[in-house]
Each structure stands twice: as C-alpha cells, then as structure tokens.
Image 1 (cartoon, helix red, strand yellow):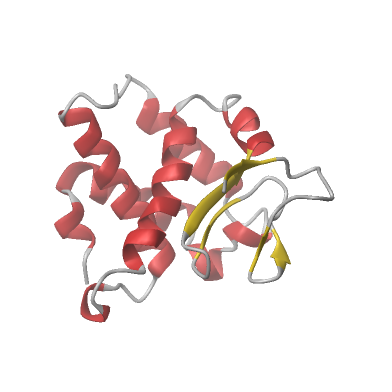
Image 2 (image 1 turned 90 degrees about the vertical axis):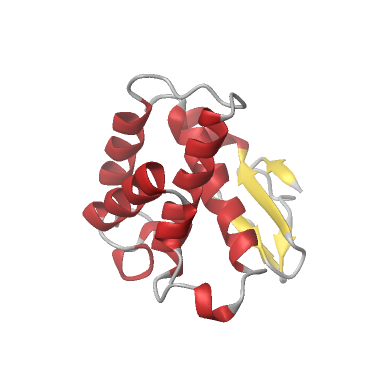
Length: 149
C-alpha cells in the first residue's frame, strides 16, 4: 500500500477500517505498511529523522508478526520503538542511511510532543514519552537483541 492521502474519502482500508489521517500503521491482515503522506510532510517540521522513525516503527510491527511469541515484549509498541531504532542504527552503520547530528534529538522531541495527543499515541498503548524515548535509545545504542523479551 505505502503512501496514501489521509484527507481523501477514498483512502485505503485495513480489515474493513479506513486508514486514519495523520497516521501510519502495519496492516496485519494484508501484511503491509501504510502511511499518510500528510503525516510525513508534517514530520519535516520536526526534522527529517521522524520520517525514518515512523517507517521503522511500523516495519518492526511486521517483524513482530513473524517472531516467535517468546521474543515478543509485553508492550509491543515500545518494542517496536526499540526495534525500529535498532534497524536505523544498523542502516547507519552499513551506510544505507546517514544518521545526522540532531536526528536523535528531533525524534525525542517529537515523541515527547505527540505522546498522548492522538488515539494512536495513547500512553496506555504506546507508553509515556519517557518510555518511548527510553525504548528508542535502547535500540539505538544496544541493537535488536536488547529489544527482545
């Protein structure tokens, strides 16, 4: 599916529900990642690092869907933050992605600013801003093994 326009009444659906404006998600029933292009445009107001974090977080949900149950964390959203950061760190190490000075701060500021503000960033589901930043930093510094249960 990839990018969609969240303002469009014809935006795609996952499991019979229309994709939400200003959101990104992994659709388990169709095994794909989708994101509102408007979310990505807005993300640039925080810095370009957030675009990578959003995609890597959703990609991590696709990975979780394939993982043995014993490796899934109780808080799957925080695990996705951690695994997404580990993937970004790996991409930076192998030269696939350039991790710019300030990217970590941009992502932390965004996680802090958006936590609890929308239905898809509810702290009960995704953790508090501090928990999300902590999970992200764990993955960034320690790799994917630190993210597994």
